Structure formats: C-alpha cells, structure tokens
Image 1 (cartoon, rainbow, N blue to C red):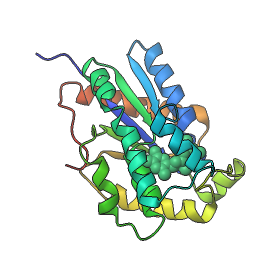
Image 2: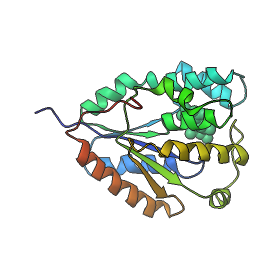
Image 3: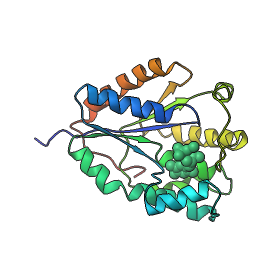
Amino acid sequence: MAARRGALIALEGVDRAGKSTQGRRLVQALRDAGHRADLLRFPDRSTEIGQLISSYLGREKNLEDHTIHLLFSANRWEHVPMMKEKLHQGITVVVDRYAFSGVAFTSAKGNFGLEWCKQPDVGLPKPDLILFLQLNPEAAAERGDFGHERYETSSFQEKVLQSFYCLMEDKSLNWKTVDASKSIEDLHREIKSIAKETMEEVQNKPLGELWK
Ligand code: TMP
Ligand code: MG
C-alpha cells in the first residue's frame, strides 16, 4: 500500500479575517499533535516573481492587469514541485491564500470573466479543504484600518467577496465556511478539528488537480 499522504488545506477569506494567524496556529497545533505540517503563504514575496508582485502591491511598480494575474499564478506554480513532494511524503500543507484569491481579486477589477481568471491555475494541486474565514464588513472595520497596499479599500474588497461567493458555488470543491468573528482560540479549535477530519479522510486518496 502506498504511504499516506498529507492534506492540502487552503485558507481564504476577506482581509483581516485572521487567515495568517489561524494558519500559523493550525500548523503549530498539528505539529504539537505529532503530525508533519508546513505553512506556505501566497504570494510568496521571497522569490524573484514574488518580489515583482510585492513591488506591484506596494505601488512601486505598475503592471498590466493580465500580467500581474499571470505572475500571481506563476508564483504558485513555482512551488508546485515542492508542494507535491511534501504532500506525498505525508506532510500536510496549509496555504495562506491560493488560486481562489487569484481569481477573486482579478475578477473584482471588472472586464475579467471568472473562466479566464481560472485558466492559469488549472491543474494546480487541488486543495482537499478550503476554509473560508467569513467576517462581515463591520466586524472587519473594528479590527482596524486597511493597510496601504493596492486592493486595500472597502469598495474593492466588497467586489472581491462577491467573486469568492461565485467560486464557492463550485460543488466539486470542499469549501467550508467558518465564522471568523469568533475569538482566535475558538476559531482555532474549530479549524483544527475540521483539518484533522480532512487529513484522516484523504490520507489514502490521490491528490486531485484543481479545476480539471
Ligand atoms: P497578502 O496581504 O495576504 O500578502 O496578499 C497580498 C495581496 O495580493 C492581497 O490583496 C490579495 C492579493 N492577491 C491577488 O491579487 N492574487 C493572488 O493570487 C493572491 C495570492 C493574492
Ligand atoms: Mg495584505
């Protein structure tokens, strides 16, 4: 019998919902429980492509809208060999944002159909679970102002949210919405329990290909 594989778990959600905090907490808790788990974050600003993305987000550089979309996707693809290796070695990989952010943010610009936006990410490792951290705009506002990067305005974020809702209609993906207005600790417990269930369920199943 083939060795058990790790699960691919994506965290998505609106800004300030707590994706990064929960990603770190989840990986730490899994490790404490004796599982192997690693955290990745997209965009990964440390690569050459990631640096381009970072200077775009920081408004130091302007890039044409299709171009930046493809760079975000390329930034995921450059990690795919490493992600597959980890998953097949039994390491659970938690990703802080994934292709769904890619599609939701670009399509929120208008003039971009969801189908076009999805194409570059078709065939990426398919998440076994996508946790959507839901937070209403009022609760998000109470967590402080947006930063100063591109896309960090409430009108744009509202469009992003609508695009996420469209993506969630795809029942071939395992979306689970969690209430991110809970305390960090309560949300962490819920996420940990869903993640562990998923890890059990998929350990003997083949890794899928996204949107294929
Ligand atoms: P971060 O704040 O989580 O580092 O994400 C940077 C920004 O990039 C955030 O506004 C979401 C956006 N983004 C995209 O536009 N496309 C993508 O593919 C990803 C992963 C993020
Ligand atoms: Mg940000």
